[in-house]
Image (cartoon, rainbow, N blue to C red):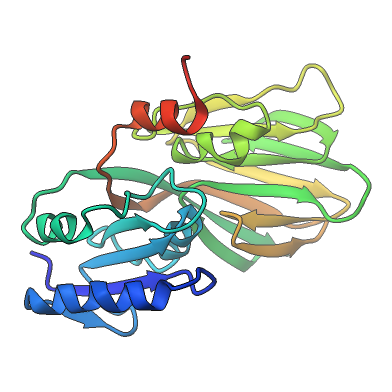
Length: 259
C-alpha cells in the first residue's frame, strides 16, 4: 500500500516547480502524504530524465521503495511519458502497475586496507584516467586476473547500464532483468581486450596505475590513488522501477533498434 510519497525533481528544468505542485496536490487529494525529505517513503516520484532516476537510486536503503519516473528531461529510457498523468498516478496509487526489479552494483574502495569510499549504482561505475595520459588497468574476477591493459578506462555495468555509457563504448545490450555484470574496456591499447559478461555472483577487484577516478552513474566521482583497490559486487538492494513501456519498444523508439 502506497501511503508516503517523496518527489524528486530536476530544478534545472524550466517550469518544473509548477508541475511538481500539481502532482503534490493530486497525491494529497487522494489522501496520501507527500514528504518534504526522503525518510520512509513508499514511493519516489522523479521528475526529469534518467539522471533524476539515478539520483533517486542513491537514496535507497532497502528493497521496499518503489520508483516512478516521469519524463521531463531529454533522456527518458527509464522514465514514463507525462501525458495523461492524472490517470497514470491514480493507477499507481490503486496498485495498477508493473514493477521491474533491477539489479544494482555496489563498490568499496580500500586504501591501506581501510574503506575510503562506498557507493551503489543502477547503471555503471566508470573507472577513468585522471589526466591526459592513458592508464594501466588490472581487472580480477574472484581470484583470477582476467584483464591487464593500457587504455582510457573501463566500465563495470549492470544489465540496465548496458544501454547507457557501455553501449557507446562498444558493449553489448543485455536484457535489463538478467542477473549479470558487464565489463567494457574504454579505448584499450590492444586488439585482444574486449567486453566480457560474467555471472552476478562473482566479485570484481580493480586497480589503476598511476592514478585515476571512479564516476558513479555519471553523478558522483572519487579520486583513486595507485595503491587503491576497488571491490565491486552485486548489491543486496534492488531498484523497483514502475515502467509502462516494453523494453524492446524502448530499444526501437530510442535507438531505432532492429530497423
